[in-house]
Length: 460
Image (cartoon, rainbow, N blue to C red):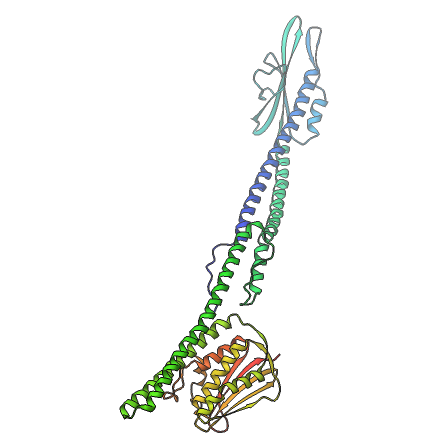
């Protein structure tokens, strides 16, 4: 079961939120700028045409025989009519007195002869842009201020602004979508080095604690430095743990063996039955303590090394022959015969120390639970693409029910309560084969008494 990781937020999501928020803000600003520019440009264009129209009207006024003569030029209104279907209004006044046109047309108060002036007003229930200009003339020896006003509705301008707004909105949306796409790729590119680092570390085996040497961005250098420092400390800690386990195994087993030897020597010198009984109980307790301590240390070593296998090519036949030779004297003490059936080399890849440990525990169990003058047979074969190491004895076998649970820690069969044991032998063997990608099979012999335990490893 994988450990639950406390996740909070996402770098990619945060980058996208910031970039998209900026893109949305820029899109709105772009829309407003385009709309404002279009409105100003439209107003300036209309104002320029209105100014030209009113100037054309004033230029058409003349003084003949002491009277004002006004001939409205066609061009003064045709240039306005050509732009749109908007309505056009005009008014001409002499010293503020209405002469012709639309008398109620709003005009700029006190129009200046120097420049045209503009206002926007409501006229006949419509918004009208009005320009007013003035000109001074001498009529019959007196100075006259002639003013002219030209107005035009703004429907066409509103329609144009709506069209420009739609285009500006489409431009803003397109800009936002393009920026969002670029933001996504920019975010992916920003976290790509982190993903490559993660993949590089994930692909490593448990025993690979080398420093990360691949080049990384400057911002990730502190993270990689901290990771390398952690792996170096972990490597040192694992090495110390392995040394401690090995040293502890030696220092625990040796004193217990010495105490057992002394107890056996004392047993041979004691004559009283009650003392001999006490010494036998002491020897039994020492055996139980020695076996329990030894297997606990073996289990600790298996748990430790299984996480970082030091795999190499192994000849399982030769490994089994060495283990049978080592445990031969122990079997001889109980008058048990050990046989090895390994005619051909059977090669696999794994940690030889772990596999030796697993096989030693299986053989130790077989010897311990076998009757005197029994047999223990070890067979090494290649079968169905697997390397099979089988240990078969003629002992009391497994209980009829619950044999599958015997690979659990400290679990022993109901039929071996009187035999010294710790309940870790099959656990160690099961964990070793599991670490090597294999499996463990336990069952009773189909012919005759005894148990059969088989370790399956991938065949090289």
